Image (cartoon, rainbow, N blue to C red; front, side):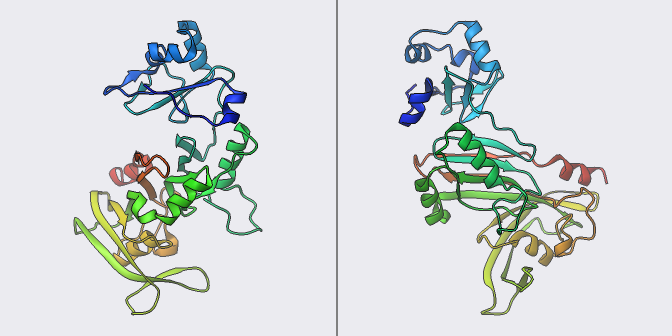
Length: 313
């Protein structure tokens, strides 16, 4: 195990100890914070009562996320942080969860219906950016959040923000090389025949901000979407999509081109909205960490409403 570096302001305000699990196996959190290496960093081994209090009241984090369950596994490579001074600031929001956080990045699960970033001065609703900015400033007034990429308002799932200008610049200027895999799941109307394939067209945008697909040369921008079928049932098809290009509304428009619009996507040809949302979810995100270059790999479950509609229709 090794000690993690912290900025001076973090050391000045809080007594934080951070250790990494460098073993090849997972360890229950309660046992990990009682390890001899942890005791040496702290100066003495904590009592069992101390450990229970720390966990109960939010003094312990794994990979930047507060952990309270004594049985939570600390996986190989995980960082565990203990704040002996006070509880960590706990993030809680009904439409977004933090999946991972460190000094440079935050990975979140964004809920559907939540804007990623503001689109104009007239907007009134808080965005994912606004919510995270408020959260990091509770930790320290000088903390900031930086936009790396976006998800459509009605698309749920994984997205990343930077916490430093350096991390933002590294990701944005080298996006295609830094992002190793990014997949979406969608429930579409009808039964898709082919098991897999690719949809290619040019995507343009009208004056009313509606994206359209065309085969005309010189019109729009080239776009390619790969797909494969995961499951069929109830007159629907559960599909996985991955992008060669990242155009606005690309998956939604290409699903329409396929003749199978995404459930709930009335803008692009869906007949109905039985689950009261767009059935599109950013499920996996794998990238090279912009600062440490560590391989970061995240995966979310398929939304239960997608499965339920397909299997019980």
